[in-house]
Length: 462
Image 1 (tube, rainbow, N blue to C red):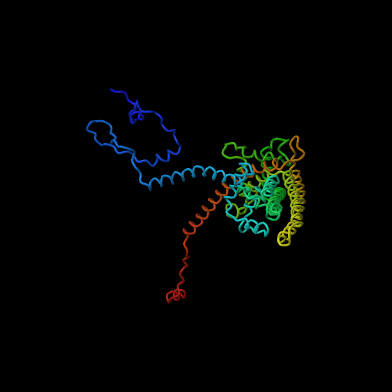
Image 2 (cartoon, helix red, strand yellow):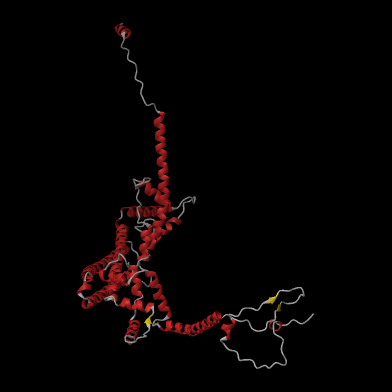
């Protein structure tokens, strides 16, 4: 077996020992020449089991004149393409200037791609207070991504420096977007006022609903007829069960912490709890609509009590202070718009904001007064039930007070639903029994026969 040679050695021409080796130096342009050279013809005689052999030729293959011209043109175009492509790429990069950080530029770019709006639409929405095309959520995103003072300063500085230059670099799309946004008359001040107007109404309504709920619960717990009847039953059954105890059998009241424990007090046969018996006794003796659709729950609803237990008067005070602070800021920002805006862009912004600020101050003051009254009402309710604050606390918190009522009301409602269902079944059975009794009786009466014929008259005479 002979040695295997590399492919380059296999196809290498035999070396002429006597020939002079004065080869010409390698020229880079030969690459383009060799790309157009046709392959030499081969002998396809495989009978000898050898590689295809080249057919000897007297000289290099001749090329037609027009082909030589084409090769020269292709070579010239290739050289120009190689030399011009890097230059074009560098020019394309140099035409755009980036003044924002990569993270900031990416955030603005994402916002731009999600808007699908023209700048004139945004300006129309801001100046004319029109949310039909640009909603409040979009305005919020634009306000949060607006150009900051240092960013806007860089953008304006670049614009001044490249104003008179012929080959000045243009701003990248995020920078250009922020610059056009800043050209909207008083964009930041106007959008701040627009957004605060919407959030103020929502916030003040939320505070009002919560305070009204607290007032309603305090009033129901103090004066609700159903609550008084239920507490009276708890006291009566408690005194009855402790009748043999001189110190506990004649109590005039009890602590609220007893209420959640009633479900754990079991009967002698362990078949039912004290709470379930109180619920049954109440429905059968105090509620005329028991077992009917119009039957009303005597205690406050558990979900209302739970919501009240999560409230804090400190949070109300904090929210109202923040609203008051933001309202003053809104008044200042609106004043800036009044001072610098042209008559064309003054209305309807000025009229709308003046009316809003006046009404907002009235609502703000009203809720502050309502908070004071609600806090006072709550403390009176806790004192009514002799509820004392925990150690380290100045007063009873809504969580401590309403959590007890929430647990008791939830347990009471579970048994109340079961007992109502049982009463309904009993009423249905009674109605069915009445129907069966009516069907069992005859529907007509048989009257005694009175004889009125001739025989009857003769018999009467005799």
